[in-house]
Length: 299
Length: 299
View 1 (cartoon, rainbow over the protein chains, first blue to last red):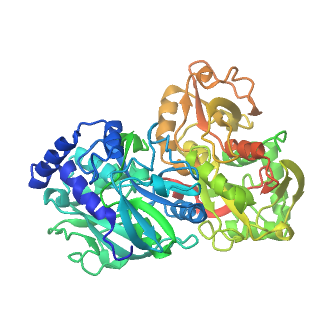
View 2 (tube, rainbow over the protein chains, first blue to last red):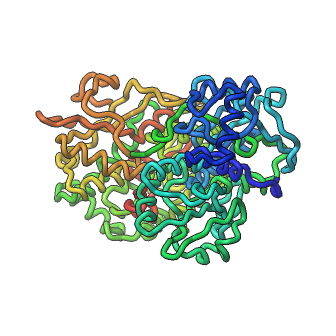
View 3 (tube, each protein chain N blue to C red):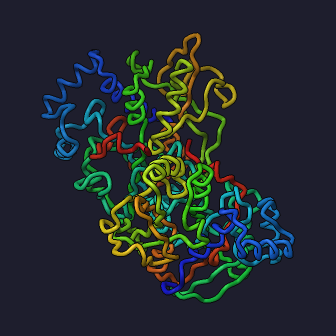
């Protein structure tokens, strides 16, 4: 698991192709694939989940249900769930919880009335002793009475809010993945979960940076306001051209690098914990919920 | 426990005498008592905790460390803690978590470096099978390796923000406790924890009500924006003159009743769960932290 590329990387790439609304080839290809599966960007989240449940679509969810909240999924046994919940409570910026299931209960009624987490993701990854043990499109045979589901917000929601506000995101414009960096900021541990804060970086002109602080402050459920701005060395980032995950994104003269807490942080903590058993979504194959991104705004 | 008056009621009364800054008798009396104990409103939180630790002060904390965050305390065994943490995660408006300790660990380093929760409250209540089993000023003899401490935000912090903004709070002006009501809104259960949302009511002129929504939206860690405004019957409140807890506070012609989620909600859920063993702060005898109220603002 530690050596695997973080799944939100692919998730971002996929999602941003859709969010950017650009007619690049990936987007065209996605649309053709979607049509073949009987889904489209306009499909309701429930229709999408039905398609995933029927295994008509087992790839990434970028560009689908665009104005709706998509979430990262982590499923762990109850023993680890206690500490993982505490870890998220203590590190709300990188680990914003959208929902937590009851042990053994595959439903998540606060996200949609019909979700069955055993079938409703396009693709899952199964981990044993911290190592990738396979991918599946249905985890019903693996389900246990002690499994607890966590859904964690992702930056898709706040990126849409930024773009709706007229702020251009260079990685979207370039069709790249967002740049991600491990920092020298330690998260607050809980049980076996610990590790550095991972951040995303978006280059912005000063006025856009200020506006971005305002806009993302309204979205604490999806990482909220930035954690750092302007001085990468202060948080242990030596070279912006060499991200730890994702793609390099140039910072132009007169721009500031703006850093947000990233959902790779809990994934890294999960990897470090090397649990005997865990299930996550596969890269980019997120949980599509009935919530609108805008509903996550705190005001 | 269920028949006991909720502890935040006394807490509010005590706190608001201090917050209101009025020279009423209670406030004078408090000041004399504080002086005798070697503490004052200007004492640093660490000095106050030292006084509580030495049992020089075992009464309420209202009017002390005024600009600092005070918190409700709930201590339960690990088995119940799992569900209580989940209950708070699912009901963030009534149960805003400021900190959660590790099992068996009496420290809360995110609130102050020196806190020992076994000694640093002025007074504790011990509950057995849901019944009050006594009060203590030190719970060291009762401490166990499986006890988990929860600190939950209280409305002191946002009331100060409202008053700093020039909004007058009638219950403070009248020297009364805030009016609290059980609503017909169910909280989202978790394990044995469930029950109705309890709200506080503050009457405000329309412009002040709008401003109050803005101001309290900045404080999600202490209940955040109101949950209801203007139509008590819609949330199951038949008579504003008959609060379920606290004191009646008149709503004048042209004013709207504005309702916020209340920290009595988790107390009621705790009572309903009838745990074999639990410890809380005694009414009004809150945990005084090193955080400034203003630091809880989300922006």
